[in-house]
Length: 79
Image 1 (cartoon, rainbow, N blue to C red):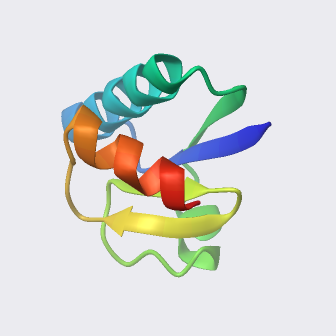
Image 2 (cartoon, rainbow, N blue to C red):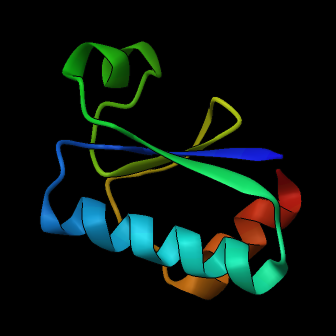
């Protein structure tokens, strides 16, 4: 099971990243857990200096932007 973590305070971009990530995971038929990390200290512990960010199994893959569903699928294939 993949652990997909959305790092950010809950802003509109964070919510869009969460929606795109969930859509990509569902389209791929992945077993996943989607976790929203909103605590600034936790986000900084990942080394993410810009939000929103996407981490897969604890490894940051995207920071400071909201990739589309297809781009997220490509990231998940490599993760």
